[in-house]
Length: 94
Image (cartoon, rainbow, N blue to C red):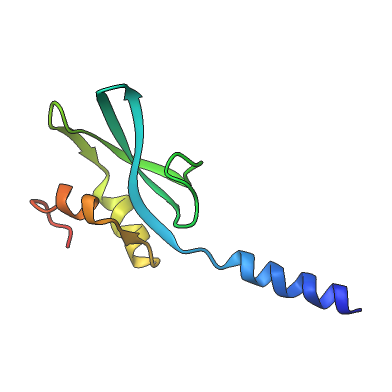
């Protein structure tokens, strides 16, 4: 009976996820590009994301950001990393 209660408690704890909008690195050495992803804040940088919502290439300054998805996740409690805030600084996202 004690084990059943412990399992219920851990299931509740695992269902609480803190989402983060941050960069995921990919590309070749010294030619890195980044994908803008929504991911659990406790996962590693290159872990499996919940959703990819854009990309950023710092060498060519190319970028694409799905602002509707960012707003959706921000309304549901996701936090943006400082780098993502800087990338989207010139747009309508705060």
